[in-house]
Length: 311
Ligand code: BDR
Ligand code: CA
Image (cartoon, rainbow, N blue to C red):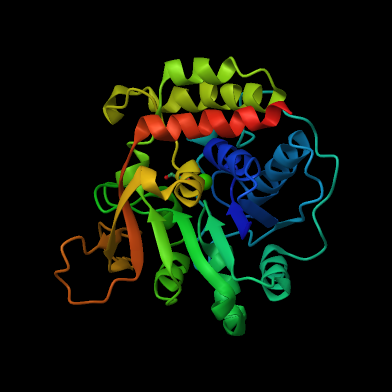
């Protein structure tokens, strides 16, 4: 199985991403670390522990990371994810505690110990990943790839130009995109097509296990924010789970190798990912950028992963 580390800010779609990742024997989760983003760092850490408790996976080490972005104050998305960061379904209280290391130390420890190169899967602001890369240059060669949710080739969802995860910590994102490590970018271009519809949620609700029931509850809440007609959505975009879907079934996606840079100073464009879709800059590609998804195949994969929790 492919060794992975999930760095997340749960977050409804982060939680579902974790649930999908841990359902598959193709992936070997070495650690779960948390970033500050959708909610404050204490809450995202607690939410990761609650989800792993639900999954009976207290064997996976969990650590909290940086409490704020590298050079800015934290912005949270409680308008999307609620007061707890995972509003909606009833979740168990954590039955276990984080390890004594912080997220950056835990990532370093697990990467160092791994016999195979590790895939990092950030689904929140990139603060922890940037700090890990800056502090442990000797471990870069042991990272197979960074499969991240963030950015957009087109318009933003937090400002007209920027996607939330990149906007929260553009300096960190800049360091990650400049790192030279292979990157898969699941940006809004693809995640806005990865919509889950009401009928898909009903299909999930028919899966009779507590994990699927929790996901249905998470999706009911996640729908609320996305029903605003301004978005033009029929359902809710499942951003973060695109990372796991790409790892499990890359054939569901189309992608283009692109040069991607992060705007850290723009007057109107702070936190924008500038994606050289047509190779106009002459810069070498630094990311595999996902553009399209087979939505029905994506939903079928989610159902398959959730059904795996029946046994
Ligand atoms: C990203 O922002 C967060 O609210 C979601 O969890 C996702 O990672 C989408 O812009
Ligand atoms: Ca997230």
